[in-house]
Image (tube, rainbow, N blue to C red; front, top):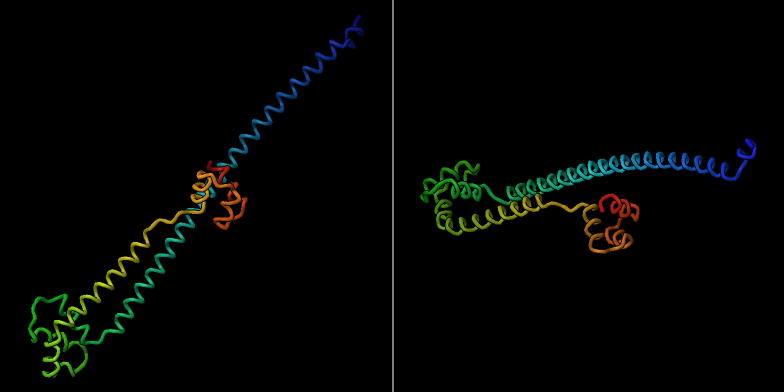
Length: 198
């Protein structure tokens, strides 16, 4: 009876069922562990990507700022080179004094570094042309100021990252292949970005 019961089909099926249940439980446990590990890895990848993007944006902003500073410095240098001592004196006089007498103007021209400006005939000529020169200087100054203002405005405009462009195009219905072609990036970068953020 014992041997018959031990080797019966019902007993064998029961043992197989128990073993199968144990295997399924073990598989589920391993699967949960794998999923947890995968989620942790994905979170780490997201953090790394976010940090890298911040560094890239910081580098780009620093680079743009330095380029703008170079342009401004070059403009100011060119402005200094193209203005004669007399023009500089008139410029100082216009923006720092409200008087229009020849005596006040001579105080600046004497400091311009050229003895010819002390000549009364030169001062008379300057006095006749002063109104026109002031208008020219004011126009030139405003143009320079406008150029510098435009450069500073361009500096603070935020730049859209590649990741944001990928997400935007994906939401608009573009395929990963089209996005990769449009942005000149690899299909793997597009696919990974879509998997992580969408």
